[in-house]
Length: 89
Image (cartoon, rainbow, N blue to C red):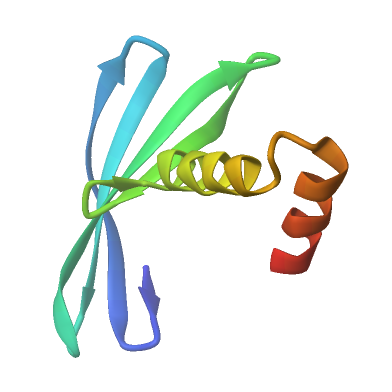
């Protein structure tokens, strides 16, 4: 598949304790290839994306770290945490 002068291709897959990891690569004339791993799990009999790692950096782990930082800044107050999260969107 091509997009904005680049190409997306699936490069493989492997089983994982929670489902399947699909490996892919995005190539662009403007820079080096970007490796992406898609972690898929089964829910209601269908595969669903659980996480995406771009060049080894997990989106879920990054978001979790952000939320932990916000929780600490909000001193554990749920209303404050929710207000902070709404401001980010």
